Length: 271
Length: 263
Image 1 (tube, rainbow over the protein chains, first blue to last red):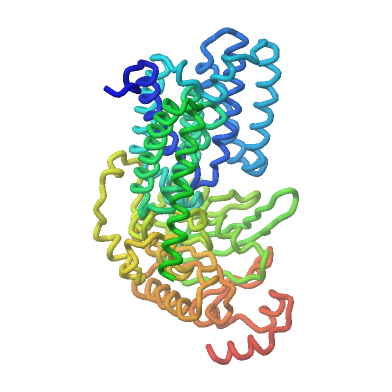
Image 2 (cartoon, helix red, strand yellow):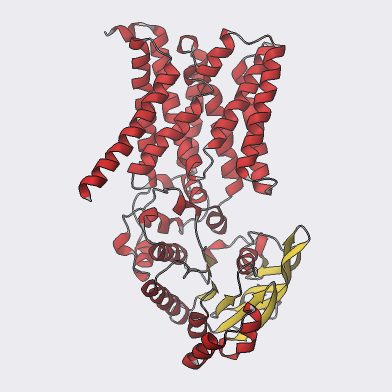
């Protein structure tokens, strides 16, 4: 057996990596198509606020993170529905408010330490079985949601008004999508880090939207690229002794760059 | 007693009715006191200059916005409470998905029109129903069925959206400037499709348009709005004076030619 599989923490990292690599792009397809990619960043910072409260009150940080991201998801979608402010501005307001609260609370908790860093940048050494069970449960919920509500997700991503006029309950679908995105971000923190998880929601999707024809194939390809990036990135991280979250995200960015370069060359050859 | 009988409508039935409909925000009325009805089988063109509230009227008709005063009735129900969406086809001027590399194929988009509520098994149904094929053929996009919607020309995209509406077997079709950005040949194709849907299939059409020539040629009824309803009646009753007033321009040459050509 290769050395990499002889460590329990690496097995846990691979399981976590596969789950995060599948979950993030599966939701990301619908976020990118709605031009809501930034919601991932905003919810990441909200998750960080949850972690800060977790550190302050000595509770399990992911639970506080789930509560915080769900609340923020409801707030963001309500603001978008009521058009209280433009969507991108609403996301920015949430992002900075959350970050400000996080900084204050972390300071109060005396929490600028290694524990915080494990959430910011991920730390595969600290991924435990509880994290994995939570991720697996979330994966089951997300897959059920995406498959069962596929027509609603597809229609409301294509055009909000057209979806409404077809009888799709757009607000409800958006709300669940935002809440599940928040949950995915929160539970992915230990694997890739709160600052980088947004990349796995967006980058694999950017590749698949360039290449795939058909929405189902686009989702499948994005998930495959997410899983592939996780496995490859973790392997590199192990042997090169570099940060796992960074290696995973750099792998997916590498795939994007290669795809664009190939398109460019193919375009030149054909022209 | 049906809804139409209750409203005292004609035998054909009223599809859509504006009753003193007003919509505005921040104390400015975008459209004000609009009253007219659209009967089953009519072909209504909605004319007006930029910013006159044409698109707002369509959004009111579809219940996407609620009137601030008055009411809008779609098949006898308040438009924003209306739920019987299979009766209604809508072709917006532009869709968000066109700008976001939306990866769906033409046949997927047309299949969207079949939506009839929550169906968790839909994801696994990969076959294309016969009604989708028929709709694609009716608007001449069957040959494009495997292409990505975002890779098509504006005219082709408009026809795909019309097919998406037709698959629902609607009684009324609302189109928001379907000719915008479409070349002359594409426009002719579009109007011939709409003409056929209206005369042969009896589908009511409400079309927002900029193209006065086409409106005079194709529409049975014209509604001119510039925040308020300026004119509503048979297309051949509209006068040069009314069109000039509507657009705030002397349009002698254009209107003169068109009126004589099409009367």
